[in-house]
Length: 225
Image (cartoon, rainbow, N blue to C red; front, side, top):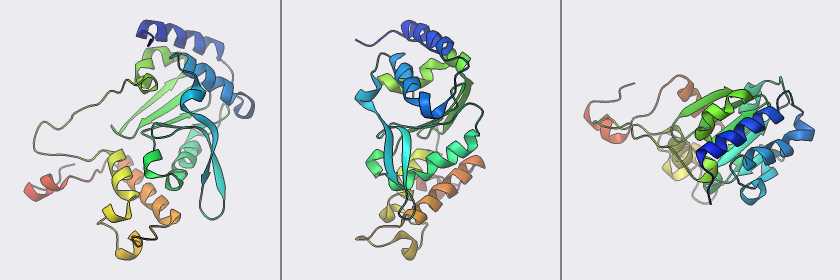
């Protein structure tokens, strides 16, 4: 039986107190997320894996700190480390993942703070560990509760960031904005380097708040930003 939100908030408050002041990546990450998932009554190893290997550029292999295929990718750092670098590191894993494995959520943390990115809704949350109980419903996907917005009430339709990432940047046959050489062949597909460059370009667009409009809108009055 799923826990009530009141029980989950109580557990989140206990979790925040127990982990206050902690922050050693190498020795505490797995314990931290074991306790984090227990806030929701979910054993972490039933849904995710630690140190998931993934192919990076060239012959190098990386290891995702925690990976729930198709749902969540976590990059953890020690307390005080730069989470901007953690975000770059997390995004660099995407080209090495299968389309079906691409996560909807990216979570970055240094134990005392969280940055949650919802790639489907193009939203982000920056909170401290102490404020986790106040925002715990943002993590409802852990128990299968997802909040979706339907922003289109008029004529303009916009692709979500994740839709653009998942359905175009990682599919050579659905990337009309790329040249034939960039797309690769039906047999060979595209290189990891090309796919990573696409992802970086898309996130740059997101940071500038520039989003590609759907064809239906562009055929009528053009894109509105």
